[in-house]
Amino acid sequence: MSRKLFLPILVLLIAAMVGAACGSDPTQVPQATSTSTPVPATDTPAPPTATLAPGETPRPTATTAPTPRPTNTPVPATPTPGKPFYEGRTLRVIVPYSPGGGYDFFSRVIARQLPNYIPGKPSVIVQNMPGGGGMIAGNAMAKSIKPDGLTISAFSASLLLNQLVGTEGIRFDARDFEWIGTIGGFTFVCFLRTDTGITSMEDLINSNERFAWAQSATVTWLPELLNAEFGMDHLVLGGYQGTADSSLAVDQGEAHGKCWQWTPSITASPHWVDTDPPFVTPLIQVTVGAKHGDLPNVPTIVEFKDQLASGQAALDLVAAATLPQVMERNYVAPPGTPADRVKVLQDAFWEMQNSEEFIAAIVKAGRDAELGPIRPDVAMGYRDQVLDTAPDIVARLSELLGG
Image (tube, rainbow, N blue to C red; front, side, top):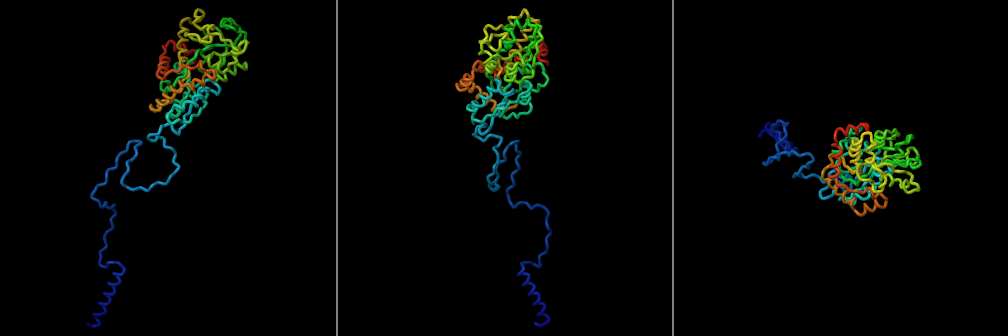
């Protein structure tokens, strides 16, 4: 081989050896780069994505996910399967009146004892929310408190009358509340301090003096009814928030007396009847039914029928107005509370108020006269009867209640 041919061949051999050492193929034609996503190399099509219902948890897939590290995630809002809903939770009991009154007392006994009858035994707190004779709390229960079964509120049946006549400020329909339980009812009695010198209803009717009654907004109608039917002009103070502060007003001479439920009044102020002479004198029972067991000699308004300006119409009015007192101490949950949680609370409330422990606590406090458990369905029947009052009586009630 001549030197002229050998040198070019040697150069080609060296280039080939270098290319092989670098892993390249100098003879390969460059391919166009694809911008599309490659199709997975599998013969099995991917399963379609399922449409989940609200709150439904996706099923596990074959994709292996890393195990999450423990965190301080709070307890989920939905109950764990097999675990009572109320376990580890707090139930709130709202009192629509100032501390120290009847509803406040009962609510605090309920807070201690109701958890014992609820599966999961939640803790319970009491919150006072006074104002508007109970309207503030009623409106909150209807409009702003979450219906999750974690809040119940005392609800005075006197508010049914305010709803009936369309009192300004009412923003609830009592038919919408979930009735949890009713402890008992009362009799309205009008009474004055004994040092006023008034010892009977006849004395009050014939007196030229003007006396002041300490009332909450929902029961101003009582002394106003007496004024209208007996031609009197006594002063009605309607700004008190409950039994405690209205009774204090009587004690301190800010008012001369009250037209109020008799049992809770004297229970909260036993010195009114335990002294000699008694601090207050009951004058009339505003009811068309039976007399209070402790007041057999105090007349009912029925006994004054011939002296009433409206006669029988006034008694019909009293019958409608006092019907709510048959089921006065009520506890309700917000509208829309889940039915299963309502049932748990109803059953627990009924069992509690019929238990020896609950009754003993009430007897020890001297308030056993206020007991008279009513099942929720019966109480709701009374509620509907009040709200279905005939229009002509509603019109008269409206005049009394300022609707």
